[in-house]
Each structure stands twice: as structure tokens, then as C-alpha cells.
Length: 217
Length: 217
Image 1 (cartoon, rainbow over the protein chains, first blue to last red):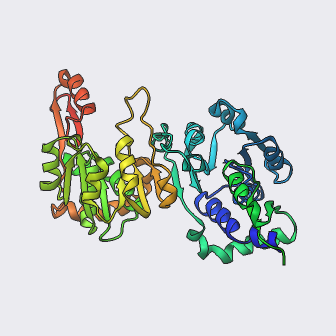
Image 2: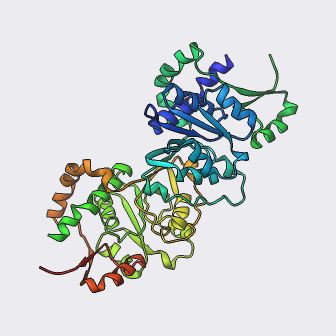
Image 3: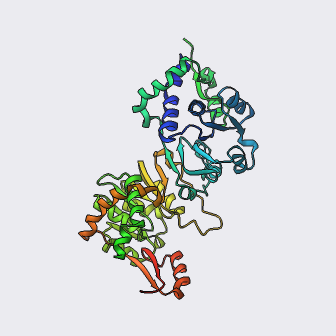
């Protein structure tokens, strides 16, 4: 039941509201998700596929990229740590441009994305994790593309979408019953592993929601 | 009739759509407008006042700031060239935070604004003129505040709002008839003054829409 509650819980409503309400996706649109193996992001990719979109995700290891493609059904994925030119890699996967960028990392990735978006595209912004631990945040230099391309960028968190809960359950429950949505989380055992787990979270070791089990009943 | 046509024309519909549609203002909200003596921006300030908002504008000379307060009815105005600490000046004029930032300049101003916005605030983005002539644009470093404060930032131009034309005329025409909306433009005479006028435009010499009269009928 844990997986069920997570899919239908906080990450689920965050993914649903961010993607459907702020992303306003059309069937066939191109979607890019950064930090794509995260708890919310793996669901965004699957929602986008169920909606008939083309979906590419970035992540920080070969294992995670394999998971995006083989477990979560993303069309493509790449390891951003192995890509020195993010603009070039986005051009390769999106020769016709990005339609929705589900933003989680900020910084250099956002800068490259802004060069590859189309007119009237949307950036639901869920996080900018690359910036949180920097003493001096990186500057985003391509922001004027928001004007040139009339882009809508919008920050949010799950609390913004609690009113959508009934609509969200109506969408997600049949898919969970039919096992059309997969959910992966990272379970660490024992309070003594808490500090190492936290370090793992910020160095990108976990996949999906990081859970620490203090004691089994 | 020239002034009428401009107020009810391109700058008018741009100001109307940007402020009312994207800004979704509520009576009493705090509005900040940069490059506020511009053709669109002087109208935004007046629309905001007519809607019951508190409005502050920034501009690049004492004369323009006087005009904001004395001609266009802004509550306050400041000369950004005389303010070394934009964050401090915004805190002074908006101790409770900004509700809508009508964005025209980007760069350092946007960075300072992001520190002073409130939760669920809006940034209709009409231009980023401080960045257009730079070889390397300045980096905007406080963009993560879009997440923290769940801000919506949206680029636009007049073409996005042509469908609102009837609604816009219904709003603006009575105010023009009652002379409750003022419009200033900058008229240069003679084709020989074209190059100097263009230079003036990019160094901020003009007030409102810069018009070059090639020949009088």
C-alpha cells in the first residue's frame, strides 16, 4: 500500500497539478523533464506518455537513465553529467523544439532549455536543486527568451493543487489499478543510516522518494 | 487624434493585456513598473491606478520620474541610475512586498524584484531592454525565488491580445473621453534626425513612444 499511497499522495498531486494545470499539455507535444527519476518527475514522464506526448528525461547516472527508458517508459533519456554541451543534446532530442519543460534544476540546464523552447511554451517550475547549495547561485543568462518566445514560467508546490485532489484521483486510480503507472522509491533501513541517506539525497544517489524506515512494526 | 489612436492602439492593447490578463490585479495590490515612462508602461501605471492599486515606477532621469508622479499619477517613482542598492529601494517603497511586477528591463532590476515579491505574485514580461545590446547578458541569480514564492512569469507581445480588443475599447474609451488617461509621446521632426533619434531611443532619451515625422502633410 505504500507505493499506492505515494503515487496517489504528495508526489502524485504535485506531478498532476504541475503537468496538467500549469503545463496545459496537448497530445503530441514535446516534454522535457530534468532530474527525471525523482519522486514527482518519474510520474510526470508517465502522465505525459499516457497523454500522448513525446518525453525525454535527464538524470545523473547511467542506471537512472536506463530506468527512465525501461521502467518509466520515457521515449529518451540522457545522463547530463556526460554531456558537455546541453544545448546540443537538447537540439538532438528536440529538433523541433520543446513544448513543456518540467523544471527541477535551474542554472545551466534552464539556460540551455530556454534556447530550445518554442513560442507560447510552458515551464512549470518544481525546483532548482542545482542552485540550493551554492554560496552564489549561477546566473541564468538566456532569460530574455521568455519575452522573445512568450514563455510562461510558473513556480508551484503541492499545496497549490489540493483542490484538484478529486480530479487527480479520478485520473490516477484506474491507471494504478491497471498497473499502467510504475512507482519507484528508495528505502533505507534504520535510524543509524539517516545521515548517510541524507548525504545520498543531495549527491543524487537515490531514485524517487527517499524513505528512511526507522523501525518495522 | 494621434494620441487617441496610440492610447487605443498597440501600446494600449499591450498594456491592457499584460496588466489585466497576465497580471490579474486585485484592488489594493502593489504594482512595480520598470522603464515606466515608456509607451506601454505609462499606460500600465494609469490602468493600475484606475483599478485601485498602489503603483511605483522606475525611470532613468529626474524629469521622467517627475512625469510619472505628476503627469501619470503614479504613487511613487525613482531614478534607478541614482540608486546603488535596488533591493533597498524596493524594500523602502514596498515594505509589504510587490504583487505585480511589469517587467521591461531584466538583469539587476529583475534580480532585486525577485527578492521583494510575495507568494503567488505575477511578472508579466514585456521586455528586457537592459540585456538586448550586451554581448554577454547579465546572469539573473535569484530565479529560485520563482519556486520559493510560486511566482508566475510570462512573456508576451501585443499580438497575444488582439482577441481582447473589444473588451479593451470598452474599458479605455470612456476614460479617454473623460480625459482620465494621459498619453505622452516623443515626436522628432525630419528624416535627417532619424539616426540621432534612434540613438536617443537606446540611451533612454525619449519619453513614451518615439515617433519620427518624416513630412507633415
